[in-house]
Image 1 (cartoon, rainbow, N blue to C red):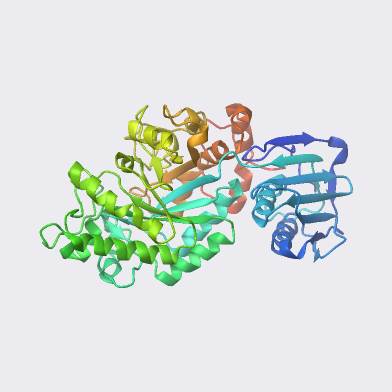
Image 2: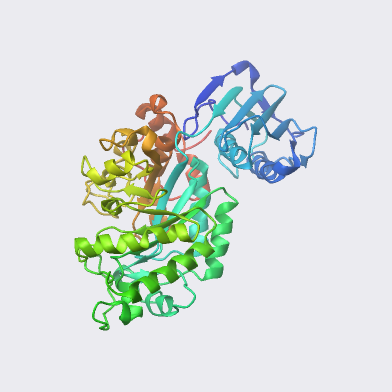
Length: 491
């Protein structure tokens, strides 16, 4: 049995340059081997493993002589790669392991669905040359309103990297729960991370410092940067339940398991507030090797505007003090930002003066408009999970927009990238994550990777339709959107 030959460009995200050559198709035979530069041995082993699953052949990894070659060198951009498929062999080349990993994901999509062991397969001939449009292509997972275990997060990581997503933003604190152990402040997780926390009291749990470090390392091996978020000065009821002295009048507050927002706030006029905040930022920065630390800053409705400015003026420099770039929801652009700070736009309004001013001042912006990129919005009015305050967001709506057009004054040159947040008020399982993320997250991934002029909804719809059997083979609970003419079986 042989799998149907895929076309060279039938991958997500669509590559920058695809030059098919049908006369150069490569037959993966029982004698195939993968060879690699020593520094690329891990990538070679990953590719060999995929080939073993697809074909059932032994596919050894050697230092030289393999018909499939993994080579470091030839590019000056970290994420760029080139794949050449010819009748005599396949060559994957990049300047960095990250570039090779990106190319590996492209080759993976040219193979049949994993685990089939069908014998000889054919790879489509030609050349792919590729690099991303934006350096930041992310998704966010809310652990505060419902906690997901390290293994569940790792499983999600393994799925998203197939689409060259390279940042995972973890929302670690909110009114309903605190999800990361902080040395020196044990009650944050002892009281606000345990059973009964989360929306409806069903999302308890937290990451120990050791589990977080292991998760960060797991992500790094897949070239994903973890972006931790501690939401301040609002969304802090869980912290104040654990430590009443952080409340404005020191009273013992009650835990909250509803989904309301905007009612809690740290006191911007007390030094105890800043001692707590600096302790937390220092510890989170020490645990996180990546360059970013997200300080939230959104929906601080119960913080008076002058107090909000006072708070952020004190707090925004702290990530930089500990070697990180401050990221925050775009409300933080109401104050003068440190030079490296990154506002993240999340609302649905057609303009935002603060973000436009930040862009004029030279700040990079992450674009996450809720009416296009929020994965927790319902697909349609009948979707059993999700919210609809930003409207319903189908797959085409997730795909058919451009971040360089989203806000006046925030053009291509101001964008660090795009992110698709997934809030967890209605989520209860990994299957729920998958249902809301797929197929919309691949749409956002293509926006972040593929040149604007090359993107086309009809093409994307056809390519994602062919992913159905692949997701089925991986056990991914994707949403079978009626917008897509799904292919049910890969022949």
